[in-house]
Image 1 (cartoon, rainbow, N blue to C red):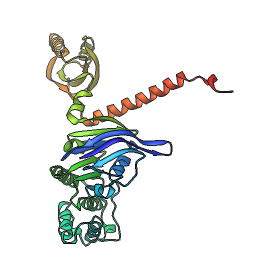
Image 2 (image 1 turned 30 degrees about the vertical axis):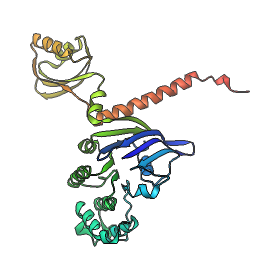
Image 3 (image 1 turned 90 degrees about the horizontal axis):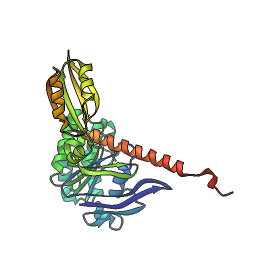
Image 4 (image 1 turned 180 degrees about the horizontal axis):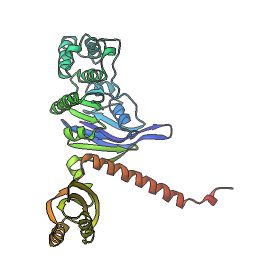
Length: 332
C-alpha cells in the first residue's frame, strides 16, 4: 500500500501540489487524472523518490520515502512520461544495467531481464541500439525496466504514449495482469484507457484533489439532472415545442437527425418521473416514440465537468476578492 498524506510541493512561492491526501491499495489499479500542469507528474515523481516534497509524507509498504528511501524505492517500479533509456546502449545491455542498479542478484538477473522483455514483446529487439528504436519500442523498453526487481508498486506515467492501437491493447492487458499482484498508479490523457483498466480514480487540478471515487460512482453522482435520450418520429419543431412545454423539462439540449422524420433528442429533466408525462404528451399528439432511455455521463464527461466547475469556482473567488478589495485602503 502507498499512503500520501498532506503532500505539497512548492517552487518558490508557486504551488505545484497543495496538501493532497490519497492512498493506493494493495493489488489496485488506480487512475490518476488531470489536465496539463495539474500536478500529476510532480506527485508521481515524489512518490517514486525522484523529487523531494516541500511538506507531507509518502509511505510505501510502511517505508517513508524520505526517511527510508532505499527500502521504499526497492518496492517501486517507475515509468516516467519520458522513458529513462540510454540511446547508445543495446536493449538487453540496458536492462542488465538497470537490473544491477536495482540490486537484482546476479544469479536472478538474466531471468528477470528475459521475463521483462517477453512481457513487453521486445525479445527480438534485444541486440538493437535503443537510439534506432521507434518511439513505441523505446516506450516498451522503459516499461520493461520498471518491472525489473519485481516491485510491488508500479508507477506508470502515460505508459502508452507513442504506441499504435494494437500495442496499446497489449499494454492495457499487461497492466490488468500486473494489477493482480501489484499496486499500480496509472496516469493517462486517454480516458478510455483509464476506464478500461481502473476501478477507482483520483482527479487532480491545479495541485488539488478534486475527486476520489470509483468510476461508477463518479459517473452516477456527477449527473445533477436526469438526462433522457429520446428517439421519436414526427415533426421536429413540434416535438421540441411539446417537450419544452412540459413541466419538469429543463432543456432540450441536443437534436440529431437519424433519418427522414426521425430524430434523437437529449432532454434534461428535473426528475426521472417526468418520463411518464413525456410519453403521454407525445402519444396524445400523434408523435411516435421509437426508443427512450436514461443517459449517463462517461468518465471523459465527468472529468470535464469537474475541471470546468473548478475553473468557475476559481473565477468566482477572484471576482469576489476583487469586489471586496478597496483601492483606498492602501497606506499613504
